[in-house]
Amino acid sequence: MLRRAKVAVSFVLVAFLLMMGGAPDSNAASKLPDPVNAGFAEKLFRLNCGRSLANDESVWTPGENVGRSIEFSSTCWLIKHGNEWLLWDAGVPESAHNDPRGWSTLPKLIVYHLDRTVTDQLAEIGLKPGDIARVAISHTHGDHIGNVGLFSNAAILMQRAEYTWINSPNGPNDNVNELMALARKLLGTPKNLQLIDGDTDVYGDGSVTLVSTPGHTPGHQSLLVHLKNSGFIILSGDVVHSEENFEQNTVPSLNTSKSESIASMEKIRQMMATYKAKLFINHDRKQTDTLKLLPAFYD
Ligand SMILES: [Zn+2]
Image (cartoon, rainbow, N blue to C red):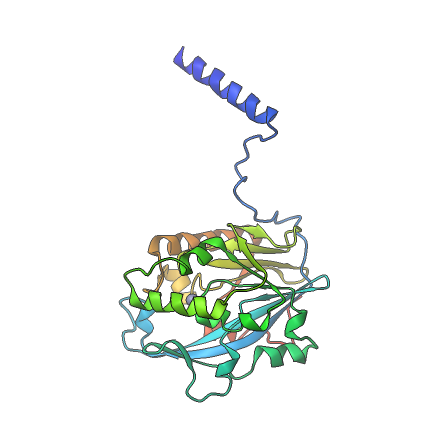
């Protein structure tokens, strides 16, 4: 009797949902593209957005490599979709250009250098900062938003959770608090700030998708790009810092959530399987050195 009653209740519920035009859909929460029918972006360029030297690798590999120095790459990506340009991450601030002392987000830990400005690299392919319609940022660490101010006419796309976080009261970790203060300063008050909630299809054709991957920061995101010849490429942001960390599920000590970081790495792994996607890891110098650099591009 009880079972029959339950079935009846389920039937009524389903009928109600159908009536409301909202049939239950297991994919309702995901805006990730259909791997078969996704549209294409035309070109993907890598910009050299800085390099950095850190004096204690163990911050990124807790318990290992204590006191060892490490060099990271900093990467920005420029995407051409139709006649529109989107910049992914804005790199180390141009004020650091050719400054031998470098620039720092956390002076005791890491120093950044910038050998070429973003403006100069855009000019190499005939573009000015004003030609960029959208700037999407993976997260608000200074080495990813250092040049947001150059793109004052662009829409700035970031996760709402990230914006809420940097405007929230300080937490227990002084380094993290320092990074939040710097983020507020570098971000400023963009004219056209677009706050995103979760996975979001930027152009509505499945070609460029913001993918929520929290853990490094509360509103961290990665980017899934679909190209005709290269297939799907995932731009990591800082969901992971190296191929080794990705293989071993290693979570840096500066990350705001270890469990979210591990879940986000797993999400990326599943996407790599679903989309047969390559993962380009922003700060992995070894990998970055093997990738095409503007004016060369992926298509
Ligand atoms: Zn970061």
